[in-house]
Length: 252
Image 1 (cartoon, one colour):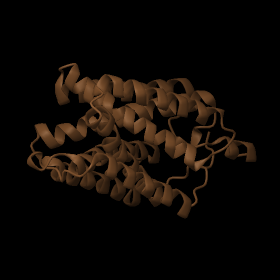
Image 2 (tube, helix red, strand yellow; image 1 turned 90 degrees about the horizontal axis):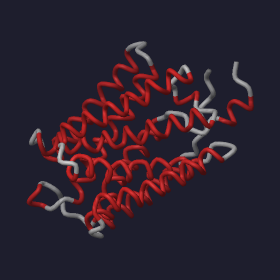
Image 3 (spheres, one colour; image 1 turned 45 degrees about the vertical axis):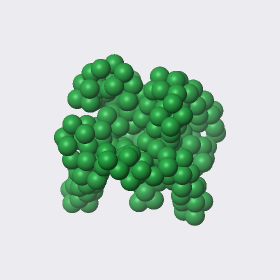
Image 4 (cartoon, rainbow, N blue to C red; image 1 turned 90 degrees about the vertical axis):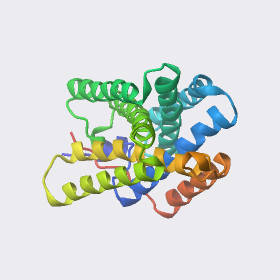
């Protein structure tokens, strides 16, 4: 049975429609923001990854040290995870020369390895069980791998599968719709559906981000990465303040 202390220590939000809207916006921001640093600033994927990984580690540390759920801190950490996911995925798939398929397989293995280790050590991978520092470490490591995998999947679908950015976005939007239908029409594991949806929002955001900022001759709209990132950031902040979020209820 949950206790007041259990609920206070759960530092992730309840999963609602606004959660998914902010998540998709954050993953899109991760794509435009990551590209702004690695490409527009010409820092490259390695330096971009080091910069964002440092920010991500600092945000995770702050999240773990926090005594309760703070929406701004939580979503700041999500944004940090998705920006480092963008540059890390690009480094793995491009600089290491293993391509989108090889990168996706490697990152999928890391993601599922993280989930399996989390379950083996703590017995649950439910977001509502994130109430201890160890659970938080697994949670954020899994999220970082999911964000990185999502970037590689988005790029693979848009480029290698030749669907373009709009086509790739539509594919992942449809897949998210299927997950949502399964959620409402069946008793399939809610934990499994959560992670499926969480993973799928990342390639959706990656495809939308690329659609916004890639050159027109590459199938994008050629918008400024800085402007797109700023607009997405403001949108997220407005959503966080307009739609108050509560911490998820603890589950054992």
